[in-house]
Image (cartoon, rainbow, N blue to C red):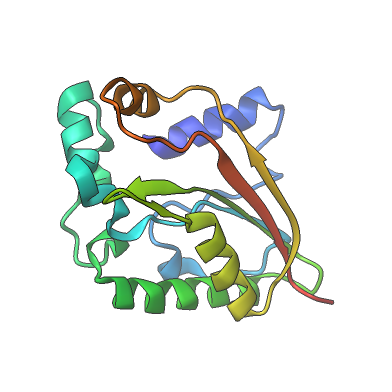
Length: 173
């Protein structure tokens, strides 16, 4: 379902399937794979389960997003923070090993509040990337079109983060 949305977005941007490959499933099963660039939105660890989490949102909105909270033992969202960090370090290294010197990893991630504390997920993603050997070439923030989740949380009086990070990490030449 989410892959079909990505394919449709690529079509709307005028990209044909010869310009990109969408890997569906767990990247740990497919990488390293020789590519020129990677666009990556890292999993959020247990963050999606806090404060009602995605399952509660799914019940409210009657959507199919509950699969993000699946009980699959390989789902990184079910890992302890220590094991999550271990696996994410491995995933960033797999991305690094997939790219040629000069290749780019584009990371799209959003900070969030959990337990009343700001979780700086963009900073954490940049740290994972640099530990894997990447250099941070650019770091942008943008406010994506409104999300119904943001609107629901704001209406309930919760603190929300509106901007996403777009981090361009480059494998040194």
